[in-house]
Image 1 (cartoon, rainbow, N blue to C red):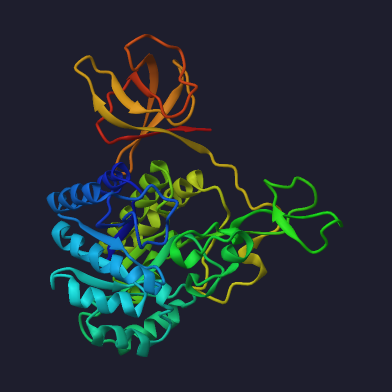
Image 2: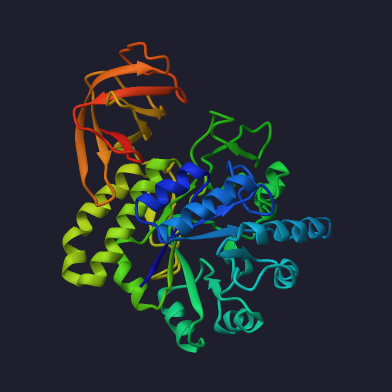
Length: 406
């Protein structure tokens, strides 16, 4: 069965991913991953996440895929020793030196996966890593489905292939980019990428000819470009037929609505294909609609069917109005029936909201009452990140993601 691998930037998001259908999650620790700006996991959170996944019969992978310098190596060795105690299912690595340390340090039951950052785009590269002891190699994002199919035919039995199916697409060769470092001094290959290829650009006036700044920093000029997001929900049967073992979703810095929506959509798609192609085609329009509702960018199939050209970029700013906003995730339900959560966006008593269920149901419910953390009645929750208690016309469950549809 094809694995659905979902990103989690925090412990609550890990639990959301598992609840909505992930087979495995990948997370970053506080060091040596490529999302330094994500909340990331302390060792204590990581241990809790591993226990949570094992209890649910799911897997957890830890990213350690920086391009390491000499100064990093001693810390990497110490970090892997600590991971031995925590016991994730796999560590995701791109650097050969880090790989060697992992082979020396990690317990045999902790698998080694080779990150897309290692530029894995041919069968010999895949075989090279398998022969050294890796159990899985992540495809370079530049590979087409035809190339992946050809690579699969050349690999030994049991060798696993992972590929990105959804999320942000880096314009550089498997993500090895110097643009962020050049523009801002933040090194993408050490986890500090500012994602400048995804900014909306404006041409600065003639006082600094030829120089570009993000539109947020300079309101003069015209939009130049903004990259589209990868989405393969409409091509799940082809992905499975190509021999991809694990469908990887990008987005360790995304919110719970994205995690719940994308996880649920791909879970239902994979399960439907395993039942019948007709079943998949029957639910596909609703899956496409759900994903579009929470995406803020236009979508593309990336390199899977042809080499992307100008149509993979947006030249008018690239934003697509979202038709749903994230309100919060139910954290607990009191004996009085009030549901408690950390509020993310404003809504009012009397508003109709949507409760997302893992099985695909979207339950409409009215907000009949609202309280602040102290139990004082309020009519709205205008300030993000505050604890709010609400009474709904339909009783939710702990872990339900709430959204408002437009």
